Length: 511
Image: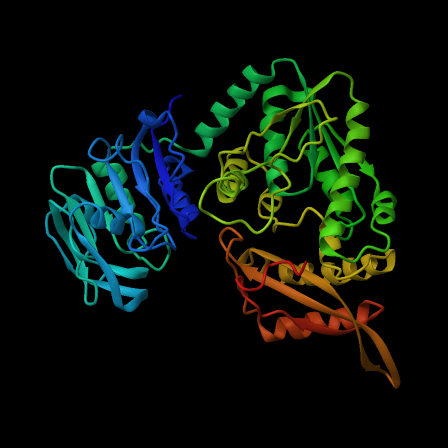
């Protein structure tokens, strides 16, 4: 089935992925491409959205897209930088704003009888984020909306299906952002809303059958959402020709290896569990630098996985749980405007000696879409609702060097924290939670004895995609009970602290 597509041109805004996720929530398929790498098949896109940008149209580093095949020929929505770009280079005027226009504002004027603002009323809250402002509309510009501080908050170009806004409809603070995007994409651009989880499963399974035929595929399972959903799609397509390998690197949560293995077998998957914990801990001996630890774990995993893959006769494909944000950021890192903090382990990380073709069933999906696809296949809700867990596991939650004893301590602490989140019905209200073992000892008193033992930090954050995150305001009573339980039950810990840093500037993990 050929879906209508929406093209999002990325000018480096921190919100570009949010635009795509909002479009997908309307059951409309969209793709993000760097502004300077417009796809050659642009004819196949039914509408175009220009993202915001940290750049200024008045500065020296102006980002110039080639809109010749788009403007006036396809419905186009220009957001923030995009709106200023259209004004500045088409007969309008953009100037530095007297005050930085950032944060909540309300629409004080909306032009009546405009499809773009259907079911949106004066007083509706919007989110501004720019230091430039449009002083004069471009040639044939028609004013559509204003706030009390920003006269030209929204406009359209007469004679074209081109719309522009100086606020961000994709963020939750813009209360009618969903309606605005729907008005543009469905009412104005006439894009069909046919991108659904059921349609994705049906089409993907069919594509996999055609692509893989009777070939054998090997997949490394992690116990997480992405690899599990990828496994189920492949299982539907090729059944027993999918060989899943679940490696215990000794850095999983308490009892996780046995529990997850049991769960996978209950799903009918062809899974082999490999306990390589001693091999990983040996590779990590004496390492305290976070990047060296990551590399040692990655290298050990490839060696273990390669050994196991060689035991499968005539395997031709390696399946990975790569998802769309990995793909976008990897493209951006090599030529798009968005900067990246670290490379992704799922994209382009195959060693040359593993002569396998790669299949990535989820590379078009965001994390929330992966969960919806899993739910449409009736996968276990507890598995689909699992918090993200880092590939290197507890290794990057134990600051400094690793020992078997430190892993044991952190597994016990983590188990108490996560189990309490579940029993207090807090687990599903948190994006990600975990405990960190700090490389410090502190003085304590237990009974009449002085102790000098480890300190652990608990961390719980709320987020939609992990790109930004806020710490969760867990109840004091919960923190008190959890702290007492950890100190009383986990030998070697005498102090518990709670991390109240947001991302940015602090990352979710400590290493």
